[in-house]
Image (cartoon, rainbow, N blue to C red; front, side, top):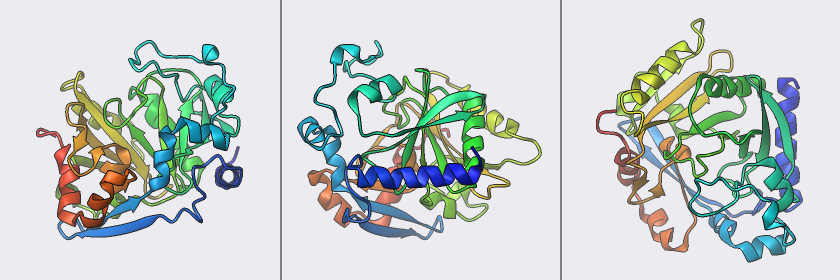
Length: 305
């Protein structure tokens, strides 16, 4: 599938999923509230969003009423990873999706020689927000093929869909099934001026993919992870010019996952997008300052990162 065709199919399918009622709200009528908070030191603006529709994602009764979750699903058929202490079935296995989510349309993809599916994220954070999941149930571990798949997907969509990877215990809530998040919306960190990496509150390196291929990126990732494989993780964003993608590498530590004014800090948050949906968080959304938003990102920065 060519880049233009893939981009069109992703965008059109996402719109269809809104019309068919699979998304928790239609983005054109969701009533999303947004605030931008300029950070003079970093030269960017953090983006805050109020998205109360996301709270429905844990309301089983409402999901069944809407047909997003099948009330006739056979729990005995669902695969559960034995390491998940909650006993939940894997939400990213295609067979589980077929049994539980009859409205979801999966788009098959081949990336870096491996099979994947792209599915619209029904509890979306940004427009055209997809989860791209490996067809095989395999761990969310960073490896060369992960980076290759991300860059290939970015290039095949003509740079319209930026690609985000959350490391296990660094924002990935399903650490036993390899997946990425993609969206057409620009992330705040992409506006960071050249040479300002040290001014950003996260531990950030940016490497442009040129004639050396992905080797410098892999070296940078392993330079961090291999120092403490048990604790060190990464978030990775692929964005920038499609001919020379820029890989944003955020050093993370699995012991630093939450911030006081936000909670769990994953890839969207580390890139400057802070989303609020819980009623108890309304006051935080209304009153948080740029300094506090910056502090939330800095709160999960590894001290040696």
